[in-house]
Structure formats: structure tokens, C-alpha cells
Amino acid sequence: MISDRRTSWLMIAPALALVTVLFFAPLLRVLVISVTEPSFGLGNYALLLTSASIQRTLLTTLRICVFTTAITLVLAYLVAYVLTHARPAAQRLMLLGVLLPLWMSVLVRAFAWVTLLRREGLINKALEALGLIDHPLSLMWNETGVTIGMVHYMLPLGILPLWSAMRAIDGRVVAAARGLGAGPAQAFLRIFLPLSLPGVIGAGLLVFIFSLGFFITPAILGGGKIIMVAEYIDGQIQETLRWGVGTMVASTLIATIFLLMVVLGRIVDLRTLFGAK
Image (cartoon, rainbow, N blue to C red; front, top):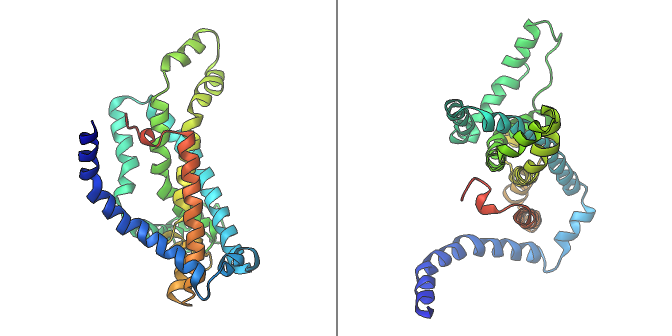
């Protein structure tokens, strides 16, 4: 038994060493820079409480991520519910529609939304042609455009965990409720929805975690007017060369993500989040 354990550790040792070198070592380096530049101490972290620009960036990121998560969950729940109860042939077509955006570059999708959302874009032109608006709507260079682009990217990440959770619900339970006299709405609200809540919470946390690190979509659809954490970090390191401040914000973001992952792991089994057995 001991020999088997040693053999197993020897087999995974190269992978562990690779992960340590390529992942944990850079993270440790980022943390060290955050407390040593420009001088040793926690002065950079004190800026979280004193810097108006950092606080504004964090609040903007939090606000956009919350709205993105809420909208994504509503849309993802509707799609996952229909997907769960669809026939096999329809399920395959719907899954293709869900997975197709994941195969496209985020840069391509961001520029596609530029074409749709700009003042002379397809959406404004269509609304004007229908007589619904007199002047073009401001759908870009603001939080509205950023949120739309992020929701589009996040929908598959919300749909798949919800679909996995809904597939695990025994349909006979809902059928039993209907047989005992419950209407469709009552059976959904009192049986199906509570049983799907772990999937809702897991999908929500997953979408929120991914939203925190968005860079390309806010940079393009925000037009430099909407600064989120990732773009702020890039500006501090690439433009102003304030490495200590940039790595401090990055370390704070990484710590937040790890904390949310711990919370997510306590709510749902991460191994089965995407349908693993």
C-alpha cells in the first residue's frame, strides 16, 4: 500500500512541479511586489481605504458584476428550464446554440456588439425604422453596453450548471405534486424551484467570479469611460508603472476570487458543477 502511494506521488510529481512553477510562483511574486514596491509595508493596501480612484473602480466593477450576474441568471434559468424539458432532438439544437458562443473569440463578439449597439448600429436603426425612438439610444461607451456584452459572454456559463442541476431533479416529484392537486405554477414554485436553488447559487457565484476579471469587453464597449478592475491593473502596470499599486489590486482580486471559490465549493460539488458523475 505504501509503495503504491509512493508510486502515485511520483507519477503526479512532474505535474505538481509544473503547476507550482507556472501558477503559484507568479502569484507569490505578485504578492511580494505588492508589499515591497515602492517600499516595504502595507502602504499599497491602505489605498483601498483612501484612494478615490481605486474605490470608484471597485464599486464600478462590483455594480456591473452584480447586474451581469442577476440578468444572466434570469435568462439562463429560462433557457435551462426549457432545455431540460425539451425533446432530445430539440435539446441537441439548443445545446449547439448555447455552446457556439464559447467557440468564438471574445474579441470578435465584442466588436460584433459594437456593430449592433453604436448610434448608427442595427439596433438603433431598427428602432427608428419602427418609430419607437426619435433619437438614437446611447447603448455604448457606458455601463449598459458593457453589461450587455458581458451577459452575452456569461450566458453559457450560467446555462450549463443550471441545466446540470435541473437534470438531477426527479421529474416524478413534480408529477406527484401535480397528481395531488397542485397547479403548474404551484408545483414549480414549491417543488422544482427549491430543488434547483443549489444550481442557481452555484451558477451565480461562477458567473460573478468570471465577471470580476473581465478585460476585453469592458475596454471595447466601455470606450475607456468605464474602468473595471482588470483594465485598472493594466493601466497601473503598463502606463503609470505603479507596479506596487497594480499588484496590490491584482492580489486583492485574486484573494476575493479564491474566497468565492471556497464558498462555491461549500455550496455545490465543484466536480459535478458541469455534470460530472
